[in-house]
Amino acid sequence: MSSILVKNVLVKNELQNIYIENGLIKSIFKEAPNAKKVVEADGMNALPSLIDMQVHFREPGFEHKETIKSGSLSAVSGGFTTVAIMPNTSPTIDNEQTLIDVKRRIKESSNINIEIIPAMTKGLKGSEICDYKMYKEHGIHAITDDGKGVQDDDIMEQIFIEASKYDLSILQHCEVDSISDGGSIHEGTFSKDNNIKGIPSSSESMMIKRDIKLLKKHGGHYHVLHVSAKESIDLIKDAKKRGLNITCEVTPHHLLLCDEDIKNTNFKMNPPLRSKEDREVLQQAFLDGTIDMVSTDHAPHSIEEKDTSIEDAPFGIIGLESSFALLYTHFVMTKKCDLEYLIDRMSIMPAKVFNLHQNKIEVGNSANFILTNLQKEYTINAGTIYSKSLNTPFLGHKVYAMPIYTIKDGEIIYAR
Image 1 (tube, rainbow, N blue to C red):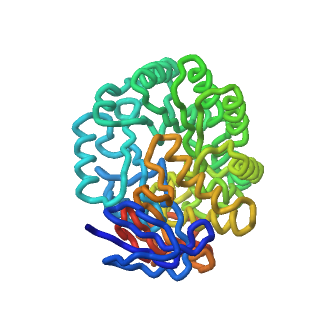
Image 2 (image 1 turned 90 degrees about the vertical axis):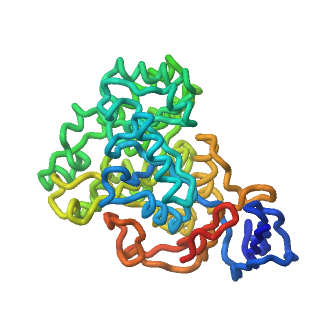
């Protein structure tokens, strides 16, 4: 019988002891029993471990960018014990053979919960839907063509019909290709001043508008990945008022940065950093609950791939390791929201929306939590990043509350 005692830890601002046995929280109380292993928390805060519903671990096919192993280490160092991987690998996760292969790789290489979200259409080409019945037989609960929005209206309607039949959530990368038309950054003052082809906000909002009509017609659960534009927020807010089952997420970079902050290719992602006004609307929507959760869209690329022009560089940045600390620093420490609300958006709500295990620190629950010193300052630098890639715009930023321990099912799987 394995046991662990976390001593002198703050749980909801009260100094407690957490006793864990066989992976479960057996007791939270002042007087602690004996245990085979003791972790002296010295007044650190215990917080539910985090959940990210959109990451790219690149395996199979792009292991020079990231692997399931390196991505998992990146995740736990940021306090995540559950992530959802996207299907834009090589081969694409769109068939039974690849799905089984990725499951095997996860079992061999990862110590966290990894949800697989396979493709909506074969090869992410948007022309032929995948075998959703087979997905359901493999325990799949959601589908996406992340990285590409489904352009064909008839195909998208077919996806809604079949997804509803098998109770699959639809996660959509909302982008109308004919509107974005090969742009590199947001279409705004910065793109015009620097003579760079821009991506209009309407490329996102027009697809959301179409899909909301299909959601109203066919039902089901529709989730907007990495929302970025104020027009999109208006559409989502209205759809929620009408009782439609629509949810959305925002990335830390869209909450904290805008197109005026762009300095190099580590500021290039899709959707792009929008205007300062868009950022302000996103922040308000995050704080008022319109935005349901935070996801990082962790998208590693090698230094060589990013070391080129804005136009030629691939879209995407990493984010797992710094997301909680960045948002704690910029939202909780500035009193825009409290710590409990941030945890709700980064752990409780993703679990609720996607029917995952709740990482609440309560007796009887699995022991999935992080320990952090909320007052300790860190600097995000290349030497402390566990991902195989370094493509983040936040290098050099000072943050607080980086996870010091990450505990999953009663085992310490990361110690800073």
